[in-house]
Image (cartoon, rainbow, N blue to C red; front, side):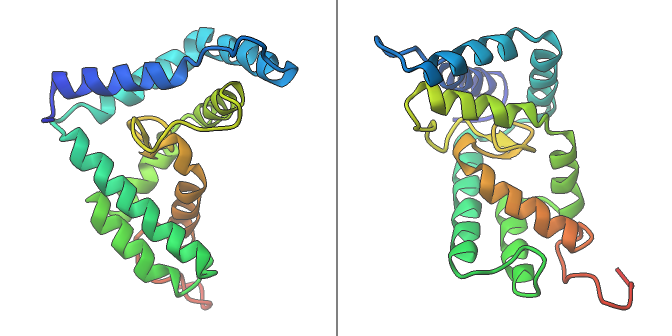
Length: 188
């Protein structure tokens, strides 16, 4: 699917479907509480405006949604492998992982870090609530979050929040240039 209005419409349809789970016929108290909190969050005009703004920023230029999703999935896989290998975000071993992630995502460290800074952290809570209502399962890695793990201006998807947290910590540890960690001498 190519970029433009059609891709944005498909992405928004996917996000709406993922964000509006139905309560099971006999919800638990936790599911009911989560559903009520979710309804409140989605009724918050400031939050909706934030998501709308992030979506507009993300779709401002033509984008191939399928290619973007594949690139994000590969970036998440890189980070998952690093985490399994015990690589800490601020370590020297993280630098090549971060370089591959930035290459896959087609962004520089400062660009990706700026998207993390624009990300509305309440979106993470939204996906937590969706998972609770669904009985503990998160939506598949798709509609995604670019600058965030859940919105288009976030770098990821709802189920990849911890991986994008690793990427953000690695960027901040490297001074956001995607290179080597700052030297102990304070050079940066």
